[in-house]
Image 1 (cartoon, rainbow, N blue to C red):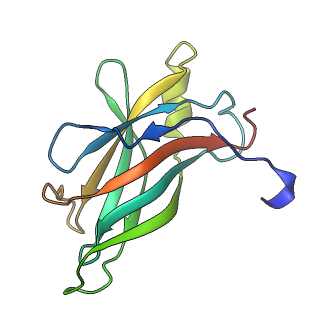
Image 2 (image 1 turned 45 degrees about the horizontal axis):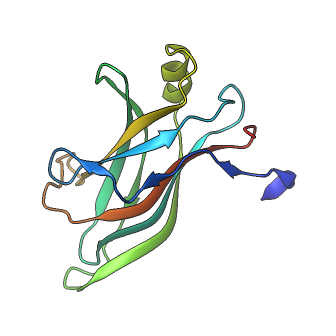
Amino acid sequence: MSGGWLWTGMAFGLALASQGEAGVHNYRVAIPAALTTRQTHLIIRELEVPSNRSAIFRVCIIGENGDTTYLGSTAVVAMAPKATGMTRHKLLRIDVTSGLRAWSAKRSSPDSADVRIVPKDGRGRVLTDLKWSAREVELVHPDSP
């Protein structure tokens, strides 16, 4: 933790994530109180994916009327084409776009919201057959208590 900043987690999207479209997971997260300065991060903890699959995980926040705002993305690379089993990534950190601040400004003090994580291939197609999981998803900001 550089500069003495105490990074505090503001939400826990538990493994009981809801699924809509095949391969897509939604997580409930708390919205940090301070979104005006510094960089907010979305943390994905213990992401498990098949060892032989690569994926881009695209993250959006879902508004009250179902509209989505892009927050960022991250990718994982397959161990090998013929690898077996699952690979666990302990922590993935996404630098959240300014879209979160714009989204938050349109709401009257939002405490929490759903984020949607969509696995895609390199051509932008949803990986509907990808079996993946994450233990926890959270938004963190250095200025939030």
